[in-house]
Amino acid sequence: EAEQISHVLNLAGISTQVTDNEEVILEKVIINAAINPISALLEVTNGKIVQEPHLFDQIIEKVVEEGVRLRPNLYPDAV
Image (cartoon, rainbow, N blue to C red; front, side, top):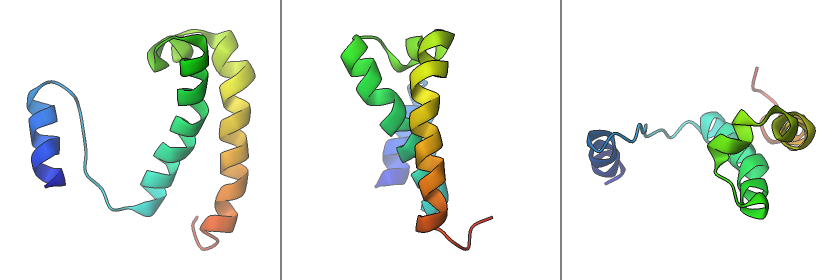
């Protein structure tokens, strides 16, 4: 089912990939955890946050850094 949804989204011009790689999923979760609440609070799109260096540098990087800091505890054998 996920492959079918991905195919439809790709046909619509929305680039998608299906994966069961937990590290890839965790990276996506960490990035979304940083960007989504801020974009909601600021009422801007995720893309706008990335385009505004002061927002990205001052806020999002710190949240992402914290997620990355916690990652070894979740995946101690990961490189």
